[in-house]
Image (cartoon, rainbow, N blue to C red; front, side, top):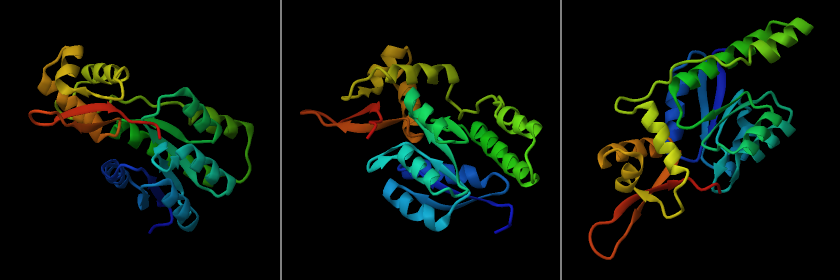
Length: 232
C-alpha cells in the first residue's frame, strides 16, 4: 500500500449498501478500503486495531448508535477522521456530528458525484495539512472557510429515476406509518403508476433510506409494503 493511500473503514449495517460504498471508494484515487464492520460492536473492536485514516459511518444500528462510536473515536485522540453517511435527517444528529468534528454529513441515497467530491476534498485537506509546519491566520482561514465551501455537482441518478419524482416519493414516505404502504397506494398518492412507484421505492430500499417487508394476508399472495427505517 502506497504511503499516500487513505486507509478507509466502512461501518454500515446494510451489507449491500456497504458493498456499494466499497465500490465507490475504491474508484477514487488514493483510497483503499481496509475493512467493513456491520455492527457497532464489531466497529469498536476493529477501529483500535486497524487505526484507519477515515471512517465512513452510518448512524442507526441494531446494536447501537454511530454518534456514540464517533465520540469514542474522538476520545482516543487518534488521527482518524469521520464522514457520516446516513438517512437521519433529524437536526440533532447533524448538530452532534458537527460537534464531534465530522468532515462531512452525507444523506442517503448515496450519489456517487456527491460522495466523490467529498473524498476528493478530504484528500486535498490531508495533503495541505502535511505541507505546513506552523499555522498562520491565513492558513486557518483557508482550512476553516475555503475548504468547507460546498462544491455543487448535478446529482447523477440511475436511468429511470427522475430527481423531482424521487423527492415526491421521499416526502410521501415521511408520512407513512409503521404498517408501511404498498407500491399501488404510494403511486396513487404521488400521482404515478404502480410500476413507476415500485421502481422508486425499490431504489430507496437499495440505498437504505427505507425498508421493505412482506405483508401476509388471509387470501392471495403476500403483498410487498414499504416503510421508513426505524431508528434503533
